[in-house]
Amino acid sequence: MKKLEELKYDTIKMIMMLRDFDFLNKVNAQLKSYSAPKFMEGVRPIRENVSFEQILEEQNYKPISYQEFRRQAEPLGDEPIDELLNVTCK
Image (tube, rainbow, N blue to C red; front, side, top):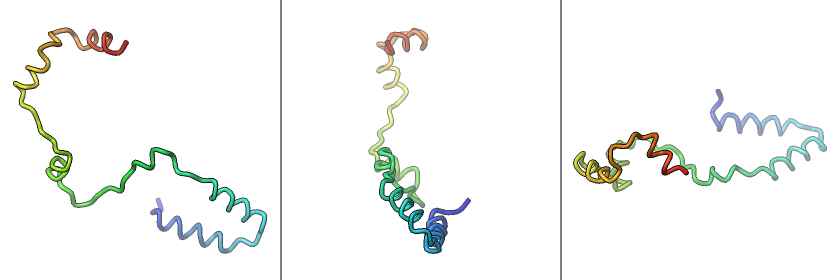
């Protein structure tokens, strides 16, 4: 699979060889009308050489102890998860 930059370069080379004005005009109109999907606005490049610990620190992650988890889960009781999901998802 080609890398993005290679694909861009190959596409540019093909466009430069075109001699059909009408076809090139259609390609131009298509490219102008293109807009990336909205979710792409939130996509960020993958960072390299970042450790798990750095990510946790940047996200201000604070784990809780098992005892704290049990204290917070106590109000839920011992009901099966299916029953809890049926109540909360309705």
